[in-house]
Length: 45
Image (cartoon, rainbow, N blue to C red):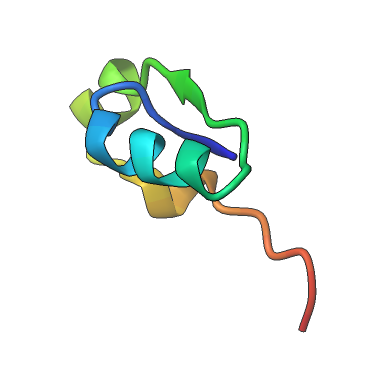
């Protein structure tokens, strides 16, 4: 799971459920008006 590095609470809950969260610095994306949604890749329909 890739998520913002500031989402430490979510990362902890994901670890408890067996996922390996990877924190990513999204500060430059936020400066440009983007958000996490801009980094989302749909895996299935």
